[in-house]
Image (tube, rainbow, N blue to C red; front, side, top):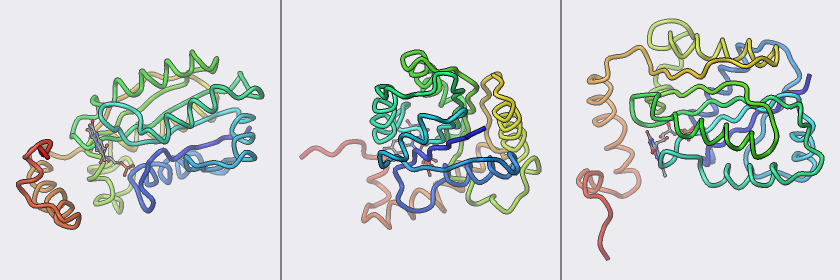
Length: 209
Ligand SMILES: Cc1cc2nc3c(=O)[nH]c(=O)nc-3n(C[C@H](O)[C@H](O)[C@H](O)COP(=O)(O)O)c2cc1C
């Protein structure tokens, strides 16, 4: 069985999507799998088209799919040599705490499966995505990675058996209020500063020019 995983994060370096792919590979054990980014060569498109299983792992952008991934999905949908027995799964992570924010993006992937005549497998929505790298040392299914670990493990089992599963929405096992405080102080504000923005710019909305 050939498995293709697409990392749909537009980030050039490390990403939460990349970390989630690492977790998924860990749960899948030894198998024939290839990981791709969104910018693909023709030969890579052919490899994806012939896969038995396709897993899309991406961040939520404006309640939807990042544009690079959307562009790739349109290309895949129009390929003539697509294996229509393919099962499609997805893991979507987002910035807000609640994994349920990813519901619409998962519905969009389901609709794409219908349009591309592919088989829907299962979707997982994971909240507080930017927290995950901070807790990467905690083993899956333990502590703050408890629910995330179980969700990824169930998806790995389903995809290895080419079975469908119930969509699930999880967040780290961590108090929401605490992550809100921690992320503001230690993540979002320092990230804004590193991008030459002030704290107030985070709350200002769209600037008038
Ligand atoms: C342009 C843009 C739009 C975003 N839109 C949303 C959103 O609608 N809802 C949300 O919860 N997070 C949103 N986020 C946050 C990302 O989903 C979050 O940071 C995610 O963990 C990034 O994952 P990655 O590291 O795999 O790219 C957005 C981020 C960016 C840059």
